[in-house]
Length: 350
Ligand SMILES: O=C(O)CCC(=O)C(=O)O
Ligand SMILES: [Fe+2]
Image (tube, rainbow, N blue to C red; front, side):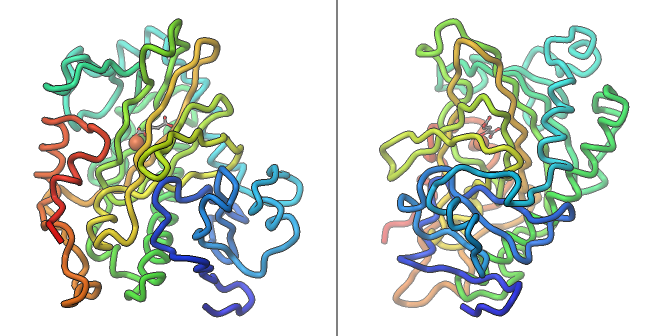
């Protein structure tokens, strides 16, 4: 597309639709998450993922990164403010701190949709016997009617302000990204956003303790996220893997100050499969605890999701059954993630 100064340009080397496993690491040039210009960067060499969105003009340093080179903090301005600062804040909120467990813990039995701290339960999914090696803390952040910072930790003292600001900033970013995805498909820029409606945003901090026998378990079993778009930051330990070509698990190299964009199931449905949701999992290691912060942007439970009519024609029929998002969530929790089986169950024969 156009290459005016500061304008986003889509590089469609093969087909932009193939942003399906990793999607990208997103570097943002300034603190207020303006996207003009910005650079999306993949965590493995770009030849494996030729269809990312790039800003133009590319400068020397970003070209280096696009080839899979190291990220040089001095040459690319990325927001220190929230992404990494948040990880540090969360780190200082210790998951092993028993007082916080007592104050913020969710009850022993996992309770779907419950805010607060939780631990995976073996019986959480009726037909899965996988025990995830993970503790987590969930914040309900949007819409504002769900946001009650009083339910969040208050240590360190600015924790609640940081989470609230992070929530606001990432909402803006999620909107921009969905807008870009819509435009890349020739849709009105608000098409996907309108289909999703007001975001239900949750921020989940996952804590993976060191595991004495990492080969026997997973930090988080294979799944794709249910909603529309997930923005994830991880610390330097690493352990997130994405499924490439439906066959090979690829570890996402942690890059400081980067936000990883994971497309989720509803975006796959709305784009009628032109963008795929990303199947991912977290592995454990025996030495170091790991932290990640996932910010999920989902439709309200009452929203009906179906392929965008503007993408349908006689030659491109709908590939997915329409659904009420809340039903999808219920079914997901009943059956368990099982990779992408919940989405697969909605596929229509073509
Ligand atoms: O910890 C990670 O890197 C992944 C977390 C995740 O996939 C999730 O919470 O849905
Ligand atoms: Fe996930």
